[in-house]
Image (cartoon, rainbow, N blue to C red):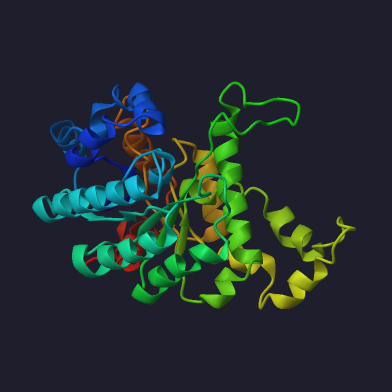
Length: 337
C-alpha cells in the first residue's frame, strides 16, 4: 500500500535557526522541540521516513502558531522563511516529501492573504495550515474571510490545527489550565469550536468550494454526532437572550450536513476506537491517512507505525484503503497520481 501522510510537522533549517533567536513563545518552543530532533534535523527525518515502504509526507510547520511568536512584522517574516524552506524541501526531495501546506501570519490578515497567494502561485503550496484561533480571536471574524476565499479559489484545502495553551483555564475561578487538560481535552474542543464557527457564521455557505480538513479525526464531532445532529437541530431552545433560531433559518443546510462536509485525518495517536468512530461518521471518501509525526514517545516513527497497523487491521475493502491511504490526499492536495 502507498501511504501519503497528510499531517505531520517539520521546521526547515532557516526557520528553525531564526526561531532560536526569539524571545517569548519562540523561545519557549525550545524546551520540547530541542528534544525531538526529527522536527528540525533533516537526516533524522530521513531515517524515520525510510523505515516505511512506499511512504511520503505532506509537510507543515510545528507549533506554536507564527502569530504567537511575535507581532505582525515578525510573523510575516517567519511565514516567508518557513514557506520558502518547505517548498525547497519538496523540490529537493520529492521521493520523501509529496507536498507542503503553507503557514500564514494570521495576526496580519492582509499580509496573510498575500502570502497565501504567493505560496500558491510561486511556491506550489498544496494547502494552508491555519490554527483554530488567532491569538484568541475566532476564525470567522470577517478580516480572515479573504484567506479562506483564497484557498477556495485555488481549489486547495485549509488544514485546521488546534491551538490552546495552559493560559486558557478550565474553570472561571482559576487563571490557568492544570494537568495539561488544555492539550488532552482542550485541543479537541478548540478544533470542534472552530468548525462550528465556520458553519454557523455562514463561511461554508459563502464559500461552497472551501475544503477544510479538521486535524485528529474531526476532533469531538464524530463522537458527539447526536449533539451535532438532533441537538443542534434545536438551536436556540437553550438560549433566552437572543433568537438563535434565525441562524438555522439563514443556513442552507442542516448543521450536521455541514460537519459531514469537513475532511478528517487518522492522527488519533494509535486509537483504534477513535479511528472506527471517525470512519463511521465521515466515510472513506473524506478521511486521509496522517500520523502527527514526530510527537510520539519514540519521537518520529511510533504514530506512523501504529496508524498503519490500525488501518491494516480493519479489514477494509481495498478501494476504501486506497482512498484513505493515498487517493484522497492526491485529490485534496492536487498531487500527481
